[in-house]
Structures are given as C-alpha cells and as structure tokens.
Length: 129
Image (cartoon, rainbow, N blue to C red; front, side, top):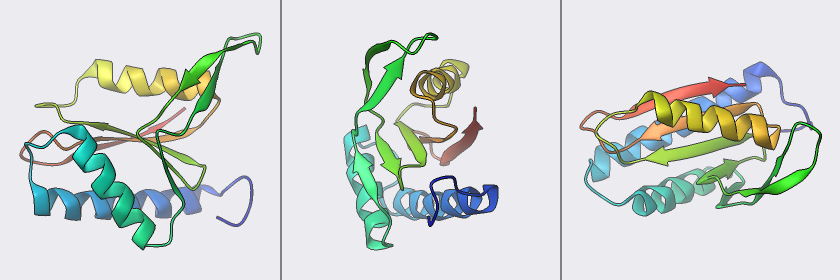
C-alpha cells in the first residue's frame, strides 16, 4: 500500500489476495491441523506474494480515555492494515466475530478477516469497525 490510509479498493484487493491464499492453503491441507500450521502456511504464501506479514505482532490495546491497557497479538497483521484472526473450529460462531470486533475497537484498527480452517468448507468473514 502506498499511503498511510489505504482506499477501500486497496483494502478489498488485499482481502481478495488473502482469501485466495487461504483458499489455496485449505484446498491443499484440508481441515484437521493445528491453528499454528495454518498461520505459518498462510504467512508464507502471502510473503511469497511480496506482502508484509507480521505473525503475532503486538498491537497496543487502549481504554476509551487512551490509557494503555496491554497488547493484543493477532495471528497475522498484513501490510500494517489488515488483522487476520484464524480459527480451527467446526464453524464460526458469534463469539468469534465479537472477539475480532473487540480487538479492532481496542487497537484502533478498522479491517479484519476472520478465517476458519476447521470446517470442511473454508469460512471467511470480512469485519469492518
């Protein structure tokens, strides 16, 4: 991304690249592996595309008044724009979505993908805060 504030089109293009890489990885590995295997595999595939990918990158968590409360470590942080939270559950549940929304709010970020490798069909949800 060329600017500090990417356009919606740039974010959507980034999401499309992540979705495709996740789909390819799921097609190859299928379900049944530990979350960490998918994290490493997806990070590797995205880096091969030339993207900046941070694994377990610390993002500051702030209170409403701006006070620093601690850190959150997303599974992947792509191009310093997109949080990716991975799951290996039978299905995505509301608590998974709520967790990601809470992370976005507390870390003052806007975009995330929630990806579930645990079901027979890959599940991906785009979340915007």
